[in-house]
Length: 132
Image 1: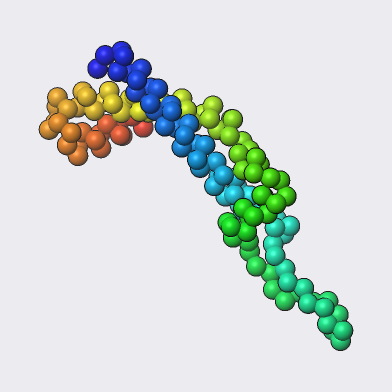
Image 2: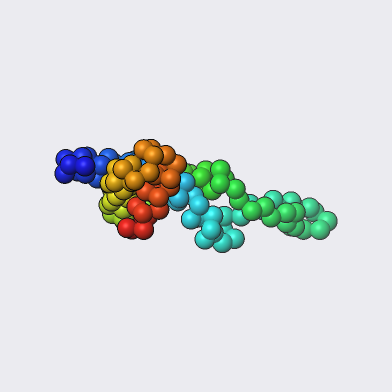
């Protein structure tokens, strides 16, 4: 594998990691909000009855769509990308190194095992993960 090939794989891995982080950022924000939400996100139905006064019928745990709706209404669409910058600082280099390491391992193992066999892919993935 030439130095140019390695640079191409580093660049491709970094781009892939960046695009993946950008696309999944809104889902990560919603997931994090649901994990850390307190009673403030819960929906309660209140019925006013002249005889019994106010009573709460049920409290329902919010789902992802409700959480997404609340975030969009109260904070706007930009809030779905909170934390993207620090995430990219970690993800882009990590994916770049992984992708390049996987390609290098695969090329070397193709000479040891049947080219592009299951063993080559599995061992290459394990070795690339080990480098990180």
